[in-house]
Length: 250
Ligand code: OAD
Image (cartoon, rainbow, N blue to C red; front, side, top):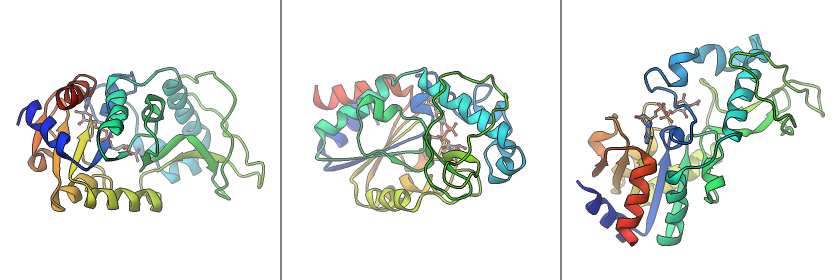
């Protein structure tokens, strides 16, 4: 199905869900996870960096790695893909943006009320008492793999951890609930830049399809979501999304 058909679906929709993964931020310079060579999980070991056990065993390694990623995100900006998503809000009666990304590029492009299924690099909390902790004031970016001591919680003295979801952890309940509700109620779901491999997040586009929504996929590569895509737009998000919005609304 071509861009024109996808634009038509979008133009007629009452409630659109935008579901994004690391691919939408790739053209901003934020690495994805599973792309060969450049993906974070082809260069780093997820078990030693993105699990509660990893933080317990080596908090400085884990905190330093997330600080490296947070400072990387601070140094880049949203791209035309994020901006096209923000523009959609002005065109469709109801828009819900759900992201697996821990960056803040949707917000910086102008999207509001973004549902963050995997948490945020910008919301650290105490690993012991769970209370929110302030972000470190430093603007220095650690080197890749550099150990940095996590700050201590001002309330209980526990180590501060990144506010992201690690492997083996539950997704934030309220975020997952509102994502599932939107997916089951929408008439079009746009899935952008995700491999669709990580559950339960990957259930969101599948739930929309089962509930009768049309699924439009934007991705340069095949994914396991191909079979449920009504329209499969093959290419980079920063090119396809502005073209889609222009085709739908001129
Ligand atoms: P992945 O790295 O698994 O997938 C990125 C997807 O983006 C791939 O399908 C690429 O083909 C696609 N892509 C690459 N460049 C693109 C571009 N310019 N435009 C559009 N698409 C592009 O990332 P996610 O699916 O987001 O979880 O990964 C899901 C979760 O796995 C992440 O949230 C993270 C990770 O482990 C946690 O850390 C809990």
